[in-house]
Image (cartoon, rainbow, N blue to C red):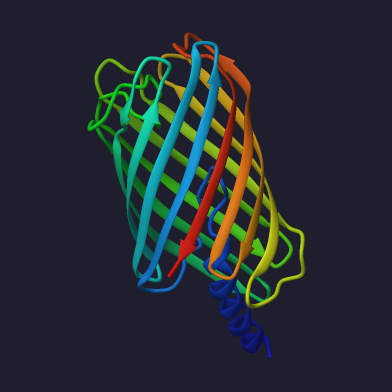
Length: 249
């Protein structure tokens, strides 16, 4: 009975993950089935002391196997002074650890992300600063039918005279509706992100999000605010609004 429970839970996780996907502003170690294609967007509207910054990425993710993922992000950005193509991002992820139990699972994955200097200089690393960047992180996630807990720890190299930084994130997911298949789920996300720069700058963010998943479609939104912004930042953040959709084949 124990192994039957594990098998049924694994089937449920695979099916429901088709729509729920990762946290809104973060990532998770659980991946979907082999040869799955995901097309999504997550528009960002950032309010700062220097004006508004907007970011519109088109993201295409593909899973060659059930424990690997490759992706390319094609973004458009606008700043208070200019607009145009932002930096193209390519990434890969590989699951290195998996332990399943009855109605629970723990996964870990390694992720590599690369920003190519193809777009305008927005002054914000995630959007593009006209320099090559590369980031290596370890993702850990523990999920049950009642909640999900995730964390991501890594380091980003930033080209030019820009400081590198350590990245430490955490997220908590809370499903509201009873698990069903086909998927019909409403999730709340509580997400913390932090960047610790080699020049002494510190940035800690909190995001409160809501996500609705129905069959293969997901709609999500989140509000992110800075909890700590210490140091000499060129741009002072006030808040960020995020709106996204996701479709899985």
